Image (tube, rainbow, N blue to C red; front, top):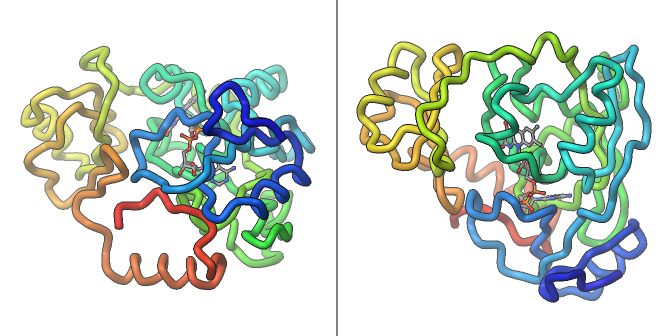
Length: 279
Ligand SMILES: Cc1cc2nc3c(=O)[nH]c(=O)nc-3n(C[C@H](O)[C@H](O)[C@H](O)COP(=O)(O)OP(=O)(O)OC[C@H]3O[C@@H](n4cnc5c(N)ncnc54)[C@H](O)[C@@H]3O)c2cc1C
């Protein structure tokens, strides 16, 4: 276990080191490669990075399935599976999310943000078939399965998608893959080269109107009702937006919040893991 180049981040290279780091730390703020910190609320605690947990555990191209460790960079995974004509369900032509080609698989899953190929491949959460997770007490649990068609086990891996580091450490995940030809073309229209600060989902018929109303639009995807922008649009026409520091507009449904709090008390009763949500 090392405190890496950046002294404030503990880098672990295997599960034993990770367990030790968690046990030695009162409050853990999980990170991957820290590429998306501006998109989540500040997580108070000692940063422990899973970026050292890398590599493919199992790859079954005929089944369109890969099991990969969470610290693997999305870009590396895409390279490893491309020879088999496969890819993640992310946009190919958008060069990552608006040009960004960094970030770990664990971060991608833990954020579960909207993406530009969503109308063809579903959300990040939909690709997760199974997962290994380290709980706050260091125990490792497995959810779901490693095949596309399965009804075995609990669906807790789907809850981990979007958990922003607050429920446990994603160690590895089994992901459904897609043929590259299905994902290679998208109709994302770049409107500026700026880095987006907001991503909004609005009714399909309102995409152009929202774009014309925001001060600095960055991109639009008419087919999915997605608009990326530097400023929050004044009107979302019943849609929603995610922005700086994890701000969500409108605020999440109280029932959803209640469910999240209840999951937190069940899976992490001591509140060991800091959550990247606005409180
Ligand atoms: C080809 C390509 C396409 C891409 N397309 C998209 C896209 O469409 N949409 C998109 O959002 N991004 C996309 N990205 C960017 C990239 O996937 C994200 O930046 C990545 O998801 C963030 O990873 P990170 O390690 O930097 O996370 P960090 O910024 O380090 O962490 C983000 C959050 O995840 C949590 N977290 C990180 N690792 C774990 C773990 N192992 N267990 C539990 N919680 C954890 C943290 O606590 C934090 O709350 C793309 C990248 C590439 C290379």
